[in-house]
Each structure stands twice: as C-alpha cells, then as structure tokens.
Length: 380
Image 1 (cartoon, rainbow, N blue to C red):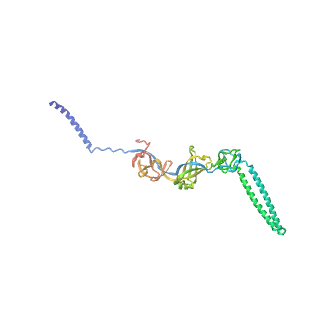
Image 2: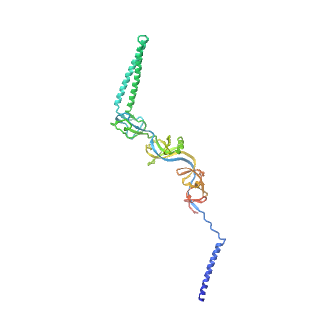
Image 3: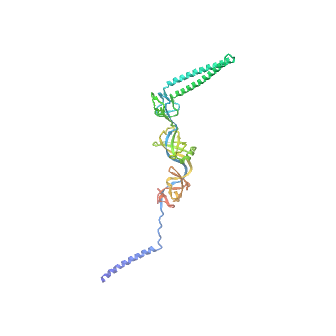
C-alpha cells in the first residue's frame, strides 16, 4: 500500500495547475472590462449609370414589304402582229414613251375609208342647205310650193344626222387605231418583254402581257401595326417629327420616308391595320417585293427623364432603381414609360440628375455602401 503513495503525491500538483488555468479562463470571460470587436461595414462593388433629360422618340419596330405606288400591266387591246418593241428589258421608261407597235395597216385603211365617207356626207349636207336656201326664195315669190321647201329642210336634217354618225364612227376607228401603238402610261422601270417582234398579240385576261411597269420613285413600304397604335398613327400623319426608316434585310442600307396612307379598315382577324410609308427612293435603294426592317417614329418627347434599361428592377411595390447618394444605395420607387435604344423613360420618381446602379443590384439593400467597379479599393 505504501508504495503507491509517492506516485499519488507526484500527480497531485498537475491537477492543481489545470484547475487554476480553468479558473483564470472563466474569470477572463466574465470580466466586464474586455471590449467587443465591432463588425466591419459591408461595401458592394457596382456599375453606375446616369439619369438624364433628353429628347426621347416614341418608336416601334416591325417588318415591311416594298410595294410600287403604281404598277401597270400592259396587255394587248387589239389583235395584231408585233412589229417593234421599243424598250430594253428592265429599262427605265417615261410616261408617253412608245413601247410597242403593232401592224396597223388594216385599221389605217378603215380610218381612211371613214374619212372619205365623212367628206361625202359633208358635201351632201352642203348641197341640201343650198336647196333649202333656193326653195325659201322661190316660196317667198310663190314660184315654188312649200312642200318642196319642207322636203329640202328634211334632207338637211338627214344629212346633219348622218354627218354626226360618220364623225362618231371615225372617232371610234381612231381610238381603235391608237391601240396599235402602246405608250407607257407611267414613269417607272419596265420588266421583261412578254412578246417579241413577229409574235401575234392576243386580247383577253389570259393573254400574254407586253410587260409590267413598276413605279420605283416614289415607292411604298407597307407594314401592319396593332390597332391600339391607330390614334398615334393618325396624329403622326400631320406631325413633321414623325418619320419612318426602312432597312433592307441582308443589305443593311437604310432610307428615310414618312407615313403616307393608313388603311380605311382594321383587319378583324388579326386586329391590325395596314400602313404605307412613302419614300423618294431616288437612288432605287428599295426594290418592289423586298422585305425590310421598319422603324417608325411616331413623335418625339422633349426633355424626358431616362435611365439605362439595366438600372430598372421590379419588386413587390413595382419598378424601382437604386440611386447612389453619398456613397450609399437608396431605393427609389419609379413609374416607367417606353424603352428606346436601351434607355427607359422615367415618368415619376427621378429628376434626371441622379447616378443609378446598373449592375450589382442583387447584393444591395437600402442604405448599403457601394463602390464603383474599377476603383482602387483600399488605396491610401
């Protein structure tokens, strides 16, 4: 038993030391004189944009089709052999240019015959008028009966009517004669000739046309818009600030025009109305049948408050932005309008002089400190 006593005595001082350390630790934790460390304030890096006042166009984009203002299909109105084609395929022609000549020898002979008939009737009328004059003189002296005078007057009336009939017949033949020489009714670009010299021109709706002429300058671009825009479109007809810009798809060349025609009815199936914009097209940028991207500017709002589109966020209370004030983010509830060229119109909530957060909003709360991205954080 006694051999274990010295070992116990050697272990006792170690137990006492551990107990003293534990007591000192508890006293240190309970001491009121040790101050707690304050948490560091969070700073969020963000990208900033500017709210500003500017002229804001009210625009919309759509797809349009180029259409000629006038398109004429030249068809034969009489039958005959083609003698001459007076245009090259695809050429530019002016109104009044002779394009086609047909063999008109038959109608020319009929016109000459009608002219001769008219001259004969005119001569007969002159003779009848002389008879009336002579019979009036004889009847006045009782050398001739009144019956002869009345017969002479009847003959004058007969030849007068015949003369009018002959003139009408001649006019009709001359009109028909004009069909043998086909002139351009409008100025435009002609297509490929359907008939060549030597072909026989036939009449009727199924006949082969001589050619098609499309008016190139000016020219239409037709597009459809929702009926809700109809009031703005009607106002734009007389607004000098309203304009239309058409860009040919796949080409990238743009030209400017203006709204010219609004269709007189809304399509009940689609709820859209067809609009036509007119372009001078002097350089023939637009070609009939081509598709183009259309941007319509209905009006321009002066001095509108706008912010970058990325600055606008949506929450339970509606759209909002974070405004930077003295290095801190402040949440502002706003009312938005249209978005044009990546800038959103602010109807209420901003005055146009603020800095707004455009990236990093997900980490923000009202009052959080912010620092623009790219600045030297922690620089002395």
